[in-house]
Amino acid sequence: MKKLRAGILGATGTVGQRMIQLLEAHPWFEVSCVAASDNSAGKVYSQATRWMLDTEIPQAVSKMTVQACAPGLDCDLVLSGLPSNIAEETELQLAKAGMPVISNASSHRMKPDVPLLIPEINPDHLDAIESQKKRIGGRGFIVTNPNCSTIGLVFPMAALHRKFGLEALHVVTMQALSGAGYPGVPSLDIIDNVLPAIDMGGEDRKIETEPLKILGRWAGNQFQDVAIRMSALTHRVNVRDGHLEAVSVKLAKKASREEVEAAMRDFTSPIDELNLPSAPRPVMILESHAQRPQPRRDRDRGNGMAVVIGPVAPCGVLDYKFRLLSHNTIRGAAGAAILNAELLYKKGMIG
Ligand code: NAP
Image (cartoon, rainbow, N blue to C red; front, side):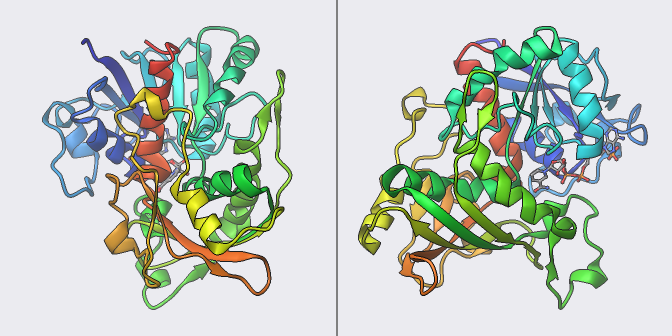
């Protein structure tokens, strides 16, 4: 089959590098162009980027000339790893010029007609694209993936909400350094330290609001949030990759510990039959050992696309508590965006 040509925005950054790595052997997509800031534009990719991954830069990409992030890129879709302040206008311009934009940035996530997509959970939210296209005026559109901690959290939320109803959730995150991009957090701030309130509390608010949109519904003209009380406290910790989260939940219906674990273990998704290349099986892995999950040991499970959940225990304040882990630059960013592109392709919405 002829592969679709993907342009990578923010190609020199942490998420951009991951997207390039994950697309190297992708069956449906290939990287056709790379774009970044004015500092990088005009340079050969291998010289413009400070490559941080353990595999080599794919040969074809390493020789590409970095371009500006503007309409006119030679591709069928763009995958964006731009900083939010840049993504806001740049992604809109590309969509207006007719390009499907699949974004990791937060700038468009909460817009009333932009899908905040997790293919296994809310593929029906793609229905919003027709309305969005009318607003933007053309064939292009924007689809986003959630914040890197939101995405891991929403899987058990979806499973529990579906089965028992979820009334309230409290989460404390321990988030890896790669989540702050490169060069990210200064070493003297994070060695021998934990930094609370990532982004001055902005990260807390993303995790408190994004799940409500994802688990909500498209009402024909805008998304309607689900009603779950949420509280989040975020922290940056001295780990390279993998966000750990400590979660407590209050259920609407009484359930035993075994039933809560089974709801997560037996979770099925509307896209199971589509066999998307990046979709992990199973998407939630339940660990029975009290000292799992751990970032170093569990972040690469399911090729970095699975969410690993520790044993469920009774909570003295809400009903149950557990820990979960997801790979922030794969499931929480690059892999999520590629999975979104795969769903769009399978549904005939790109290409
Ligand atoms: P990063 O490492 O700082 O990379 C930023 C990229 O954007 C670089 O390629 C940079 O190019 C480019 N860029 C910066 N300013 C630009 C401009 N004015 N015009 C065009 N390109 C510009 O950041 P990151 O961690 O990859 O994050 C990228 C996006 O993904 C952010 O919106 C972030 O919130 C989101 N995200 C990140 C993660 C994660 O785990 N890191 C997870 C989920 C979502 P130069 O090299 O030329 O400066």
